[in-house]
Length: 333
Image (cartoon, helix red, strand yellow):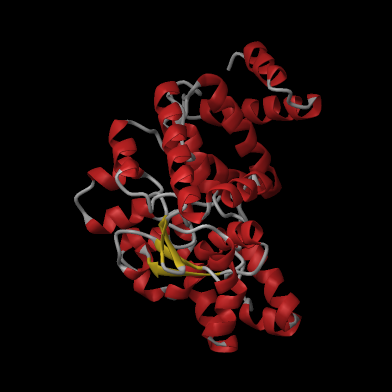
């Protein structure tokens, strides 16, 4: 690592001075770990990243998040974007089970929460993501046995891990000006423009590279974005987590693996044990959209999964149900 140039990169990106020293220290420690195997930041394969995060879990699990933040900054500095993909694999939705742990206690009491999580240790940030689905299988069975499927869905549907900040006020203004249908078209166009920018600059869309094949795939399906309205329902599909791999793999099992974002179930899709996990877990993903539409329409909106990789589908499709007052308020085609 060229510390001076990396530090300048961090300074130019307005990173706090204390964080800069922390990030430099975390990368130095990673270099020392790699040196034990005669590897460097230049020669190590990104797939080996999880070996280090699992090592950190064993000695100082509280340091994993700081390390991943440091590494993602280093990856942006060095343009080694494959490290970002691996870091996202490890960190994606890492707070989900802690959120469920707290939410059960909030709505049903600590005693029931403790019964559901009895003798279970939430897999910490840093372990291999494919070790997580077995935990999900057990917790979901206990949750549904104890509280019933409807209560389980209610706990999952606000989403367990939240979503990045959206331009809610800006989108409210646009949807009032254009109406729902044209708003959805505009959102899809903006998604394509964002993907084209990633393609042209060689940067990542979340955890994946973008090329013309990816852009054409998205262009040809408006549901890949904010969706298409049919009557009082907006139908939308999530972009596959790894679009290129999803498009190019011939094995449906692996296509579902590349389709799914959630580390709490992805490994089960890969090893063929997904049927052991309750299909209702995907209400968490539906909640990711609910968080958005609740704010845009300023009321609680029902969103549910229609098709998912967990159910054996090759798309993750959701339905956003528009109340009558919304249909009467906004322009429709």
